[in-house]
Amino acid sequence: MNSRLWIKEIKPINIDGGYIIDGFPSVGFTSAIASESLMHGNNYDLVGFVDSQDFPAVSILKDGVPSYATRIYVNSNLKVGVFSSFLTVNEIHHRSIAKMMLLWAKKHKCSLVVSSSPMRLSPEDKKQVIAAGSTPEAREKIKQAGMLVLQSGTIPGIPGELLNQGMLYNQNVIVILIDVNESGPDFDSSVDLCMTLSKILPGVSCDLSMMRKQAQEAEKHIKQTEKETRAIRDSMYG
Image 1 (tube, rainbow, N blue to C red):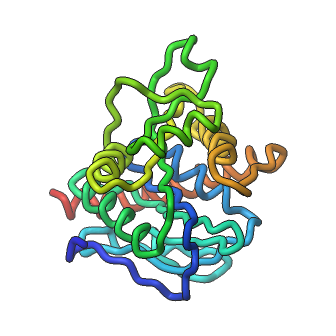
Image 2: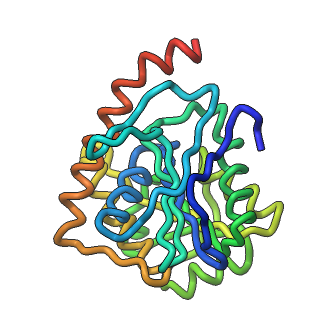
């Protein structure tokens, strides 16, 4: 693992055979908002943090308790781990973060990593969910969930590197393509992503009556953190 990027686990973790959700906002905020919304009220425990010498120094307080901006949560019953981040990480770290997640997945014997990426879809493509898979097994999971497998396209950022590294080292990665309306709020596409995740991950469910409100709140907090850390990050990266 990159010496400038590390994970600190604070609780025992047992998600053998389970799944990891990538909640880093590397390309837009949809994945970060969706992962926060998905965990709301669903028995996810804080089990660790991700930190780096290159991350802005910032503390996120929730119910009066300080925390790092990038955290790892686990639902032991569902065997689901979530990397949740309020930081928009500089692109020079995208490869390292993808490798870090896959190494952590391997360490904890997880069977699948799920990420997402925004893509402008044609009206025809919007009729069905499209996803990319790193391995034949991952692509078969996409088909079994009733989705289309992406045959050609470009996926940037952390999701793209997850696919590349998953292909090289035979780890299952699925990247869900989310149609993003640039004139609309991010929480709309986040609700769509949450519903899609529930099709792929056994036991994961979304309460639509609550999801929209949760996504709106998550978007507000994530974008506020982005605004407050931008000046620090810009001075660090020059």
